[in-house]
Length: 379
Image 1 (cartoon, rainbow, N blue to C red):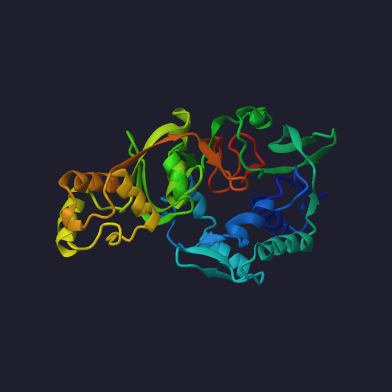
Image 2 (tube, one colour; image 1 turned 90 degrees about the vertical axis):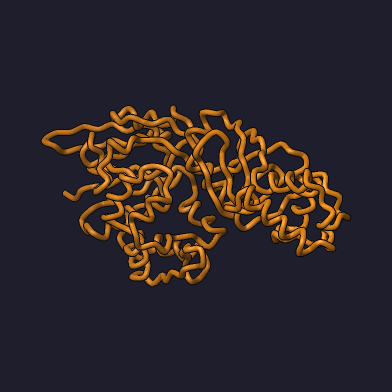
């Protein structure tokens, strides 16, 4: 009799697992169970609708440094399947990928539908059974002679049996949502949000909404968490790659602080305060007869420059030569070490990431199989 694999989750990971398992094992029956009525919904919105498939990095040691947690686990897993394998997999199926200046790789069509159609076509080609609106509420496992047999129960009362089971449903925001996995004997680390923007209730920032700065340095005060990169000012506070990376790496610590903390922004990237003071002396001589409002020597957006001058009580009509020492020192301090109080987080609607879940120590990185229950896999 043919064996049966059930994949819980109809997202990118679930489909990729299902179609590859079916292709490698022609006699294997493969079924995807998706809770919602939509398939590959996050693929559709990924990369602004273009689908950020992978990253142009051929070094495993370099790639794992971009992950906030689980580097040792990923290093072993990446030796089984890495970026070059992803690129080749899609190329073999007629989907070419292109690399952008920041290393992100997209389909040459610039459309996530290309990736979605590829996965759906593969599922159809290898007769993968796809069932939507199938919410899994309980899994039980019976085993004999080293073999597992799974009973997967759904919210509507129906159930499925399988010989293999892959959990590819992503993370859950609440610990109690993992009870059906804990019942199998797996330990779960408490989930916390891991990709979010910072809510800063500062009325002055609202006038700066929409401004982006290409290279800033942001530090969480009282910690070693630091990130550099682009920053976006929003109507609720701060967003952009630098903020999102910071939220990911400090996810557990920020949850412990109940999302009330202080950040320090260096608007000039890596320029420190003492070096800036020396630079300001040169600027005052070089542009002595130019007004501080019209001569912005740091390339900052105009509205942001005006905001800094106002914060430092600098008269915009002053010439650089007339800038008092107190305001000069204050400007250097604000540009390099401006502090903002963060009170709460704001999550994206479609790109929310959870840290936590099933313990990595209980999963084999080479196969993604459970160390506790044979034939149970995770993606």
